[in-house]
Image (cartoon, rainbow over all chains, first blue to last red):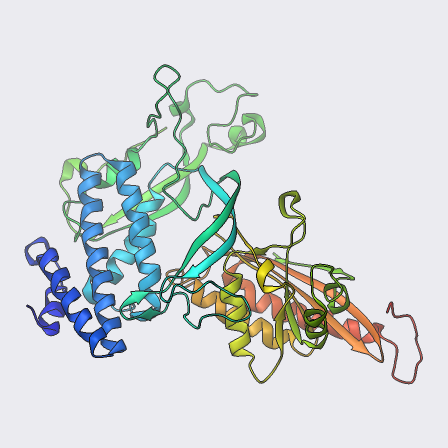
Length: 283
Length: 188
C-alpha cells in the first residue's frame, strides 16, 4: 500500500506520461481512510476524502477529453457537470488557489469548455421536499432541533448531505440556467419516437482538433464581432435578424456595417499546425 | 443598474406571529424574536407555507452567527416545514423580517453565507441571488416597515443591500411618532 506522501506525489500529474494508476490509488485511500476513522482521526479521514475527490476530478477530466475527441459531446457535457459538482464539494476543504494536483487548471477549464456547447434550453423539475434525513446519522431533519451534522462538512471521511425521503412532484419548467445541466432538451424524431441530437457542435469541434492532450493549455474569450452581410445571403427587411437577437432585420443589424454575432477567440499556449491556424465561420 | 426594489408592507412581526398555522407557543416566540425567516405564500397556487430549498442551511448558519447578538426564529412549526426545490441555478435565500437594529448585521451574515455557497465563482458574477428583507422599526407601540428586495448578481449583494438599508431605515424612524406622542400617524 502506498503511503500518503506517495499518493500525494502521484497526484501531481502534469502530462500524460505521469498519470498514476487511479484504481490502485483509490483502493489505498480507502484503506487509509478506514484506518483514520477507526483511530478517530477526523482530520486525516477528511484529507483522504479530499484526495478521493481529486482523483475523481482528474479521472473525469481525462474522460472529458477522450469523449470530445470521440465526438460524444453530450456525454462530455455530463462529465463536465460531474467535475463541477465534485469541485463544489471539494472547495471548502481544499485550497485550490494554487494549481496543486492539477485542480486549478481543470477548474478554470470547466466554464470555458461549457461555454463552447450549443445547449441553451433545459428541463427543470420543481419538487416539494416534505421530509429529509441526514445521510450521516439517519436522523429525520427538524428545522428547530437539527441533528448537528452540517451539510457540506465531512464526517468519518464522508460528505454530509440530506436525503429526501418524502416529496411531491410539482411541475417541470423550461429554464436557461439549470442546476442540473444534464437535462438538455433534445427534439424527438416523430418517425421513431426517439430523441436525436441535432445540435451544432462546431465550436467544440474547432477546439478538439487543436487540443492534443488534456494537459495542453488554451483559453477562450467570447466577444461580439461584425460579420460580412454577404455570408448570410439575401436578408429581407422583415426577416428575423441573422444575429439571433429575435427582432426584425430592419430594426437590428440592417443599418450596421455587418451582422453583429458572437465571436469566439481561442488562445493556444502551444504551437498548432499551420493548416489549423484558420478562422471558421459557423452559422 | 439597481438590483434593489423597496416597498412599504404590513407583513411584519405582528402579521407572521398571528398566522393560523402556528401554535400559541411559536407565536409568542416569533413576537420576541429579532429576526424571523418567513415562508413564501401561495407558491404555484399551493396554500401551504413553503420555504426555498436550503433554508435549513441558512437558518442554522444565521442562528449560529448571531448567537448571543440576536434571537432568530422561523415562522413555521417543525412538523409543517417543507422546502420547494426549483432546480434553477438561482440562489434563493428567502425572506427575513428583522428589527432595524439587526438589519445591517443580518445582511453581513447572509453575505458571508452567499460567499460560502458560490465557491468556484470567486467574482460572484455568474450566480444570481434573490433575497427579501423586511425591516421593522418600532417606537412606543407603533411600527413602520419597509420590504427591501434584492435580485441580482452575488457580487453586488452586500454593497447594494447595505446602501439600501442605510437609505431606507432612517426614513422609517422619521415616519414614526415621537416618544412624547406627537406625530401620531403610525399604522399600528
